[in-house]
Image 1 (cartoon, rainbow, N blue to C red):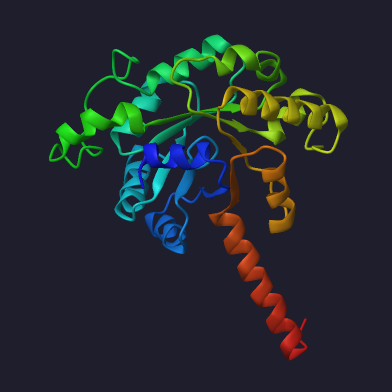
Image 2: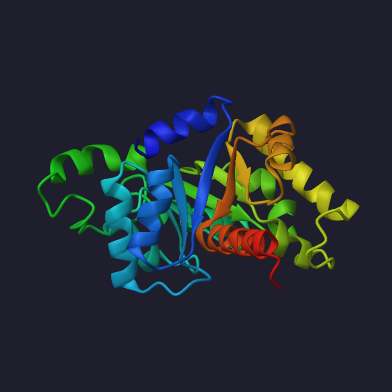
Length: 258
């Protein structure tokens, strides 16, 4: 699957599930991809990625036919270009607050004339071997995902959704709740109202919308009935802790040990 095919899935109203990658280790990324996820979000905003580790993680993901989307640390054309040159199929830009910032982010994801991306996709073109195919397809394939996680962006959502080259929106409920004065309180009416406003506006505009919300499978599945098109359903670090903890507790119970 490539980015163009994934965008078609998101536009088809078929629930789509992705995984978060936070460990800067190719082996962990490979294991997550081998589970069967069609796409993953590499979190280079909050976790210890450098250019080399990002390149190596992208290589193992692409080798498994999984669509890699990189969350860059800021709305910076140089960072976006580098992640795409290393083989990212999509870019997620965090903490947008205005339509102007959205235009800058979307333009950085594509080559001219649609955008401003600079040229040198060595890894992304299989070290130049597949350059012609890459250049003929990447502007259509690339996923420009913009994160709405501040009330300023919610207030400008109509203008943001009109951004040329925008492919999808990811709602960030944690930072959104902070910007509204209710840290990590997603259940507060004002936070829920903001989330539902973004979903409704995206649905009306035909722009796929997703989020990273947590909870049980049943709780997360409910969000598809509320208008979401895709979800990040968990991440590598959390799964390691959950599985390891469950086994430890089971062994303590089975052996009647502390």
